[in-house]
Image (cartoon, rainbow, N blue to C red; front, side):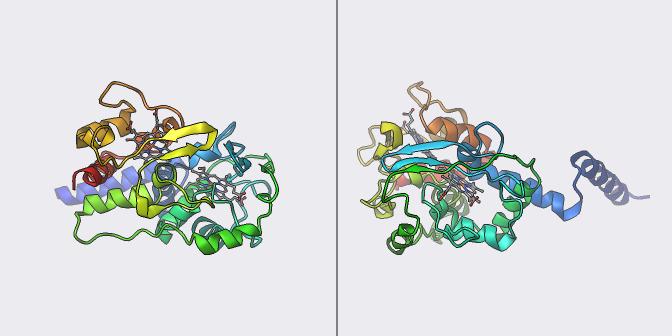
Length: 285
Ligand code: HEC
Ligand code: HEC
């Protein structure tokens, strides 16, 4: 028996052991573990986990009223367990429910619209493999006219999605970082200012947003004077995104603490590097 054959035997043994351990087999188990990482880089837990994982019920207090996130667990009645792949993709990319209703952009689908179909299918495989939560989604507490979902159709005419395109003149890591920030990890949703109807003013870049819910001020990640964030080194950025500490020794708080806990704190070193390379280059072209 040669070494290669031994290795093959060993690795197939390992695969069956790990399939037993996780309870899944073959390609399905790959999709679920890939989907778990997509779930992290998408920061879904920040908004959909309150009492129970994926059970929803997270409140987002805004000047329009209070949004309450949905149960996205695998529960057939209360969650999204009964959804087809096509229904899930339509919700994530177009912000349209299986009943044909428009979602509020408090659900950042305008960023998720940039995710490849396979990533969304893997994400769904992961969600389907989690525990169902038997808790009904509560209605939003919105004032008139914001409680009229039909108006969102008009909103969409003016805000057609935050389409991300790769830049062939930049490196693959830079493009990965740009994709994360503008796509699944939706850094733009908080760090970019909005127009009068709540659409992102992408042409302005991540210059911060003074009017974030709960009176929070989101600092700029593009800083022309390089006094604050613009003066950070690429390593400073990576450290802050992993550990949450700035070069001044402050800890990042507010809604950024959820991003650290559920998104950047769970990224692979490669993705942290990509994101920091991209953010550094915005200030040091
Ligand atoms: C910033 C908060 C936020 C984040 C992050 C977020 N969501 Fe949501 N999501 C919401 C809100 C709020 C709603 C309800 C929207 C509505 O009722 O119009 C929602 C609704 C949904 C729905 C529709 C559920 C239904 O029953 O119709 C799905 C599916 C969904 N989210 C999946 C996800 C996934 C998957 C992720 C991560 C990739 C994610 N969301 C990240 C806030 C968020
Ligand atoms: C839910 C809103 C939200 C999202 C999404 C978000 N941020 Fe933040 N971010 C904040 C807030 C609020 C602060 C200020 C935190 C503080 O002052 O303690 C902040 C601060 C920061 C800082 C520190 C800047 C400075 O000058 O001190 C960095 C770096 C940062 N964010 C990067 C990111 C990246 C990268 C992403 C995407 C992966 C992201 N943020 C997504 C809200 C957000």
